[in-house]
Amino acid sequence: MRFYFYAISGMVSALIAWSFSQIFLIDLREFFSSKSLPFNPDLILLPIVAASLVVAMVVTEIFLSNPTRYKANRRVLPPYLWAALGMGAVAGLLMASEG
Image (tube, rainbow, N blue to C red; front, side, top):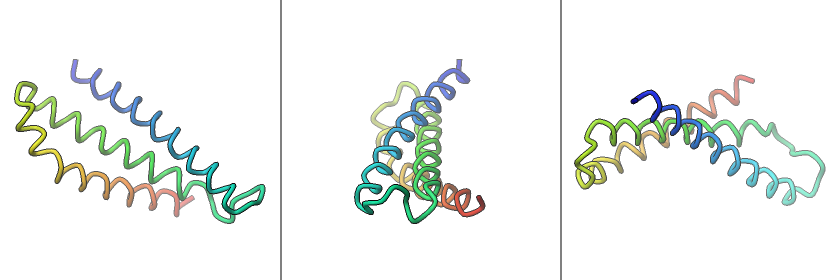
């Protein structure tokens, strides 16, 4: 059962992050007023998707570890959420710079 929660949260977060990054890339393309961006689009796409996946996994783990203590989970969540967001963004930037 735990596997299904992780799989669903990963798929949903990846879809949301992909959609958000595509909207962001479309807006950037209009800002530069050219057909192509002056940088690799992976520099925007991968940090957003990686951070979203990491945040989804951390939130899923916290809420599955204590399924009946919602208030305690909400109190514990913010520091881990910010750390996961930062680490995911850094990991995404590292992946984008390798390609």
